[in-house]
Image 1: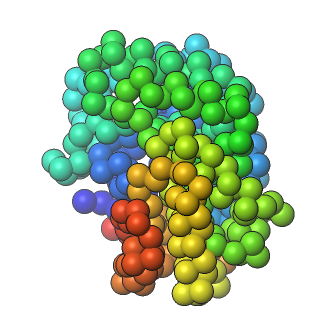
Image 2 (image 1 turned 180 degrees about the vertical axis):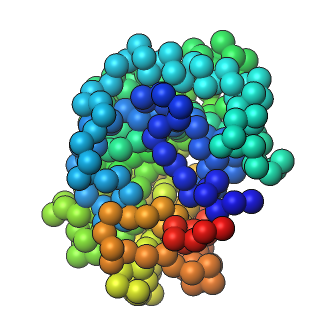
Length: 291
């Protein structure tokens, strides 16, 4: 399998503006993305982010009707299997030729999109239209707005069928959190927000650990991270899974690199020993590889 298949997550497919298909390592199959932040505005500034904000966005806001029409068309291609005939996916191995989810992700923080709840309802309607009851709807979030009633109400629209909320938590200490979030924000706020959302919805924690100047997070940081997971659970947050992964696409900051597989395994094992939540490890990709 070509490396590019799992590392190329372009927000553009053919001439689509807001919807895009990817073969995702964490979804273990086809994921149809919805970019509800085409303006590239985000309330975090993560150093490992691959979004190039030096390039002006094509769209500064979502055209809702166009977005829904695009995802409708992609769901049709996925449901029929025709998408595997496209040159981009022709080399996809058989075990990944499965339609797993529709994910609200994109070039910023999806929970800032004011029509998120309405968009989730429309995608759920399309899931019924295309007879795809097993396909999940996923929302990715950095957790900063999970204390807002409007955001929680939007996310609760997911409960009509299979869903996942992937909440980002990449740090255990305040200093490291400020670096990895690129903002002077409160780690405790994010932890409390994930716990709050987890009292109403089942949450998957997504944790990206990169190298910085060739060094990965020290064991003390990993232990502090595990303590935060336990804190979320103690406050009533229902955690389905902790995803431990590293960089797979070229980040915006040159100091950021990929943790090698063996070290990532040891990080995952260290966390798993300290928390009562399943932990899964997803290896990175060398983005300069020509494979």
